Length: 497
Image (cartoon, rainbow, N blue to C red; front, side, top):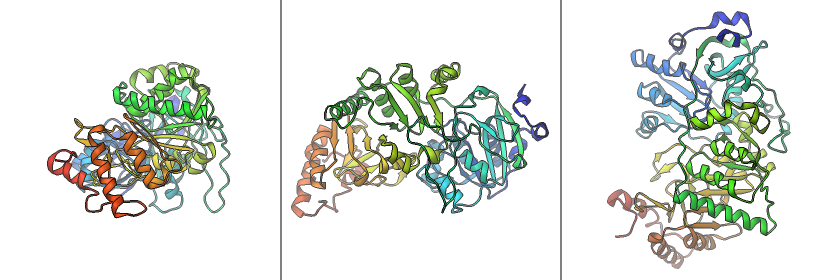
């Protein structure tokens, strides 16, 4: 039954075990792997490589679409098998190795990795490990629950190992739209003018001569960690929905808004879930990940179409979607991430982007990636692709955390991912600051008034007023700008003693 998924008879001889596939890797290789936010990732070969590395040490550079599931990043890191990793990760073990300096990490806009490979600004991929549902008679491959950078890896890798996952129904064929832009300098316009436009093919082209091994698997993606909306995320969602309602009243938006993008996690999920009981309708999405809330909105009749690069959902939602795939087939599409995250398309479609911040400062600069300016959390992901080019760039965070010992609004962010020039709206559980058309001094007043936790409002206003006495277009007290972070490190709180 499994062999029926390989429609080229001669490739049947390429079927090997994961352990045998792991022996094909050599020290120093550049490896590309399918996988985007734990969806459609290697479930056998990379874990087998981690096991091999424990006894037969080697190190690779690993490039994926985004994060891997099933603890694979952590297994590779713990085995000492990673020298460099890009462009995104969420694994605690790997994160600790990166912050200790044991693994080098390139935190990259998700739209850029494929571009750098095509432009030969990165070393060529030696081996690509790609999860597929089937191999077609023309050698092309049917992706599973993500596309990510798989089309680029298939085109550019010297060798390819395929994981044929029999847990994925072959009926998944048709939900993908595989399109690759031409190389520079003769790149054409990408002809997408609405999220539902399909412009490519259903499968990823692949030269069968590159295939050095085929491994059968039967394992679902790691389920997404979906947290129920809490008081803070619910408050954030209400502020955003009220803002949208006001924009409609002002005639700036219709009740269908513009195509939505939302980062992953509980805040984004709460915001999107909030649309279910709103007056908004005929919504569309042009994003990176289809989460539980995406399918909840489709089921509620609120969302007409959603475009992304992966499906990352809870176990319950996974069954709902793939047991009734025909219900959703004409409402979703998965694309390569250098299409889903293309800056030109984001600008053309007028995306409303909603992403999460670790902290932001009184002038609207946003830190999405580092704690106390030093330690990486996950990575910038696609938030920069969308923030710089969106019709509306919205960042959300809780006003304070850890028993209110940490304020997420500070005098100056400890690391800058998104400058004030790329940020339109800031939202916390206490309120929303619309920064459009405001000069830095005006921004500071609006942010302090609307977004800051009450315990920190007077402290932050005092900093701002004293900075203004010193002067400047963007007033700061450099000797105090990071004093809140220093106080947290030394005393366990940002609150002034």
